[in-house]
Amino acid sequence: MMNWRKNVRRVEPYVPGEQPKEKEVIKLNTNENPYPPSPKVAEALMEFDYEDLRRYPDPESAELIEALAETYHVKKEQVFVGVGSDDVLAMSFLTFFNSKKPILFPDITYSFYDVWAEEFRIPYETKPLKDDFQIDVEDYLCENGGIVLPNPNAPTGLLEPMEVYERILRENPDSVVIIDEAYVDFGGVSVLPLIEKYENLLVVQTFSKSRCMAGSRIGYAFGNPELIQYLNDVKYSFNSYTMDRITQKIGVAMLRDQEYFENTVKQIIETREWTKQELRRLGFTFGDSKANFIFARHETFPAEEMFQALKEAGIYVRYFKKPRIDNYLRISIGTRNDMEALVSFLEKYVKE
Image (tube, rainbow, N blue to C red; front, side, top):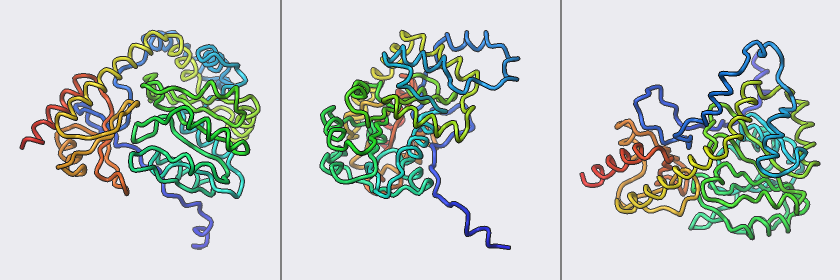
């Protein structure tokens, strides 16, 4: 009666950042946008006819795809949408990584990559970042079954020069190269234009960070029409109705307010740069993050102890007890008031 256990697919799951139940905390641990979505999203919700929920949503998310194509100046056939970029990335792993050769990604990066590889039984190798947390291009010029690289990286927040991505694409014509751009709007340069040049490139982005909609789960990918068609074939064989009617409608509304999007991104960048100055003043060191977070360490105080002290004070940041990064804190950028409270606490902590 116990034999069924030997056929269970067992994986070590991804562990997301803590979601505290208390509302009176400063939450800087999951890279959420501190600002609400555009008022146009609220208008779209008010206009939504709840009776429409009795019907299935559009499986093609045609209106949302059209809005994305218009916003990013690509063809509709070059766009794929999913329920958050995690859904898009998981679907991409399932679709494109089916050889016996290992896929490649950095050893310090988004910790869902190895989870998907394990779950889908995809062989993989992690390539160590250099001491400055940049990738070594030569590591990705070997035989492989696919490549996944973030732009910028998480949790480090660091960018690679555009020529790095292009060289990897150019020298891996037989592999699909996925560039995960969840944080690119906060100071990075997207590789999106390269989809016209390299048919093996898939660029993945999300509404969860710069577009203020982590709670609604919209992710999307750009690539040549053949790649997108393969993704859709897998999606429709798995679950045709992945994105609900409300999400599709408010996603379009958010895309229609480009000015709001640009203003909130600008505020986050300004707050990030102010926070960098303050953290340096307090003795922290970190790379030049181009994301909506800072990955910092202190020469004197252990990160795990600071993490616990901050949590006890109602300030949540992210701590990873992993090799090479177990003395770093990843601090999401909140509002200016949030970051002033963080700095005020750390100032007292360092002095005392």
